[in-house]
Amino acid sequence: MATAYRPYEPGTEPRGHLVPAALSAPFRARVWCEFLYLMISLPMAVLTFVYAVTMIALGAGLLITFLGVPVLGAALAGCRGLGVVERARARALLGLRVAEPEPVLRGRGKRGPVAWLGALLRSGTSWRHVIYALIHLPWAVFAFTFALSFTVYGWTSATYPLWRWVFPRYLDQPGIQVFGDDHGHDFYLDTPFETAVTCVAGLLVLLLTPWVMRALTSVDRIMVTGLLGPSRLASRVLELESDRGTVVDTAAADLRRIERDLHDGAQARLVALAMDLGLAKEKLEDDPEAAAKMVDEAHGEVKLALQELRDLARGIHPAILTDRGLGPALSALAARCTVPVTVTVELPERPAPAIEGIAYFTVSELLQNISKHSRAHTAKVDVWRAKHRLLIQITDDGRGGADTSAGSGLAGLAERIDAVDGVLVVHSPAGGPTTVTAELPWR
Image 1 (spheres, rainbow, N blue to C red):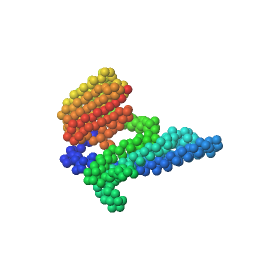
Image 2: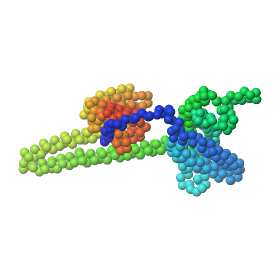
Image 3: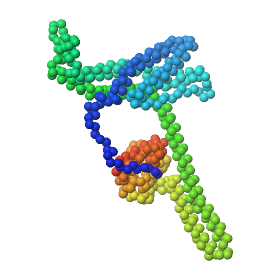
Image 4: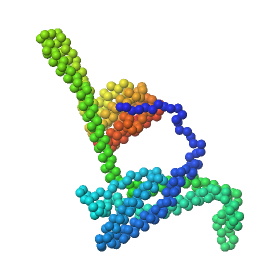
């Protein structure tokens, strides 16, 4: 398993910011992108709402004639088109990457506009776009009003000392008028204390602005992801298709490895053994001593071939795992590791055979990685059950820096574990220690 280890480079530690994050947050581009998103949301929401309501109402009213069906189809198609714009806007301003929803699927063998229109009307994704168009407007009105008022109040109050001179010069009043009545009771923010309090209040509002923007746009993120993205069922189908491809590729690679090991190992040794025995047979009458020596050498070759076949069978599925379970199998595996390994297995019962095999080979690959790359002195393997999950944690005191980037052994192992709805987590800072945790389904 070729997992790379990055050497530790001095000076790569994260450095502290000169300005605290809380003070610089109102000036960051992310906050202003979220503010811009909320400002644009209102006109976009009005457009989508008016289009959806008008077209749906027109189509429903025309259903007594044939024209209602294509009008409803146009309404759904238009909402899907506006959904493309909304996803692009969320990606550009919020950094939210939502996958394209599943396309309109016509029945097998059906072609033409009528089939496409029928599939469009039956598509749940299309109707979710309509729901988004209807419910987004009330929220966009609230978010637009709140974000604009909050931002304007914060900046105007925080900068009040800079522009208060406008009131006495151009408006003939000492400052911002808080209230006034017909009896001459007026209150202005004009004293130094009142100006300072106004400025402090504005600064506090500015410091809260990033949190307000994040809270408001979080609702938009949920709506865009849930209504304009692929459905959970479609996402699950794509995930299962990807996992199936990983399983097929892994199985094909294992078969190629077994074929290569048989061809280059046991098969080649048995062919040589057959030739040696043939020569020994020819010399049996002429030179019995030489024939006996050749038979003795052939006997040694048989032992080596048997050992290679045992190792190959153990690589396919070890007999000790089938007969005695995960604990003894992992102990036997740890005994062959070049690094001293402590194994602790606490399982009330045996998991499913397929999961048990995946757990065994996961530990096998990780221990090989420790032997080849980690420069560790000791390692530890812990296996336990947590509800409906099987957890495996392997820790070593090596140099760390395990790289899980694409193409490494850990990346391939993570793909195989993910194919059975498992998770592989690697924590390997430079200098160590390294902790690899694998989580597998129990059944």
